[in-house]
Length: 355
Figure 1: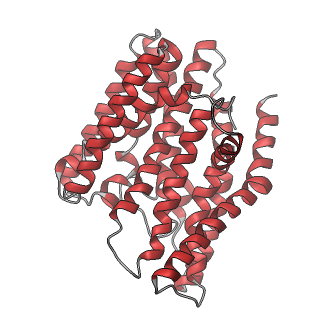
Figure 2: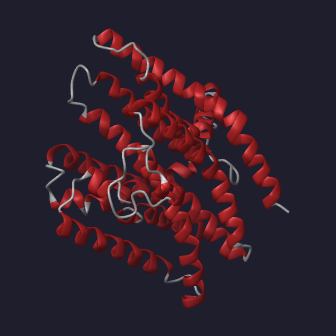
Figure 3: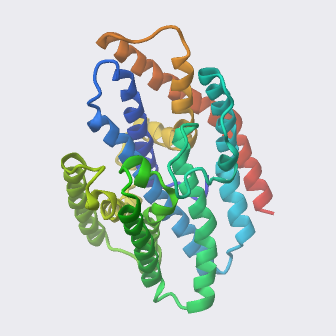
């Protein structure tokens, strides 16, 4: 992992992946009910947490390296891509095989190789969870290039937040135009379109800028966190009360309010230390945080594999049993994947990029 680990951010990452896991586990109850909006909202929130946290961490790296004069574009991309691409391509292959087993045909996957499968259009059925990874990889590609351009154009640090807000305004304008032009669905037509979601990371970058460059007193961090909680209360009301597939606000500005509210909580989370937390909770939190990327990728692949079994859950007890088994196997699979695949690659990455 990059840099020194902070318990508060590990807790944030662990919460994010557990929310996604809980949301996916609810799929086991579809034979009983289709009213799973509350559970679906957990997975949705978990992914949004990941977006903002990625912006905060990558923003912190970029800010620190540019201030010290140690930024190297090739090294940045090498570290990011060796962190994300091996697992991604492993599970792309797994999901291609599963698609063949489930549907008897080979899927089209060319756009998946360059993370353009949902650039400005709905994500294909294959490897559906990969939609968020294409958004993230696009951010990793653009963020350092944009930062380099800004450093050369504006030089000083004073206007950085202004440029970041301008970038948010640009993506928001694109999202508004897209909604007015296409009248898309909230989830597949807006939330999972890479071009329309890049601003989610920028809020995290702004939070990192204030934390790392300007500094924030604990009292200020608490006030910002409280404003974030209030913002998320509005988000929850909008999510459950508005007709999301047809409401203009839900398909446009709600995607500003969500990351802005979550980013407001990050400075306080980054300050949280593990001293007052029981050792067992500390260990579990850090393990789940370490396994989070593998856990995100293996969940639905495991569920698809389980769907090939002849056994099907039909009663409440069977659905609960299936959900529990799914959660346990997902965590076990992620732990093994991290130990024997992801971690060796990260150690090799650290060796080659430290030379």
